[in-house]
Length: 239
Image (cartoon, rainbow, N blue to C red; front, side, top):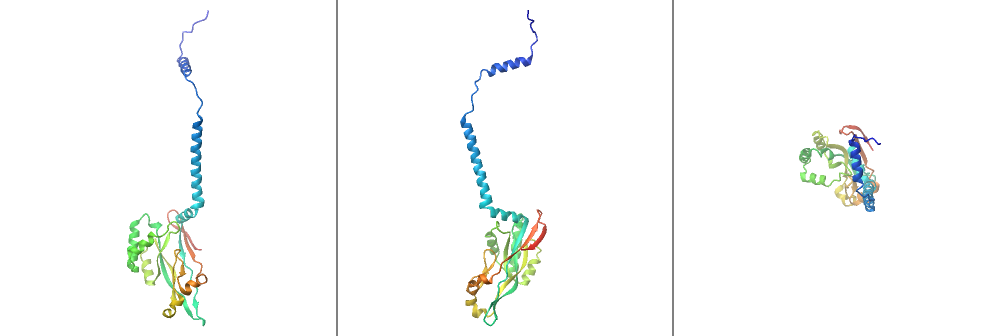
């Protein structure tokens, strides 16, 4: 004779009820469309990521490299002097004369637009140049490739002293040169003249200055300031 178990356990009742309920459902395999959709999305994402990497590394690598360099250093172009032009007796027809140029560091002013306005006001007063000329120059500069722009070249010593007296870190006065023509009134149509290129180099524009520009023009140098994340200059050198 079997002995009846009068105790009722909750765990057993709950388990039996769960088994009976699950037996009422039919399990179906996952559709192939789901796997196809997931694979398609993964493939699209992969193409997007690869395309972006190609764009950054190969197509826009130079731009991003310049942007990274701008974050760690400041660079100013140092124009190379041009050779003198002599006549057959060795007398100078065109030679260099010492002068100064002033450069502006735009990235250092992006978080302080009021400083930029004050600098333009001061420069306009010192150099007697219209403010709109400075603004147009700044708007047309390519900040992806350079962070120092030439505001004015061939300024006088008195103007250079006045600009240095502003004690503005965003302004840098460097030694430069201009061309001086002996008997320029007589030989101007033969000698021609020089100008500033888009890369801030002094190039011949007409006459002998243009005809023999490759022989007369030197190779520009670079004055580089290396700085930390706080903008403090760590070292500087001429390249």
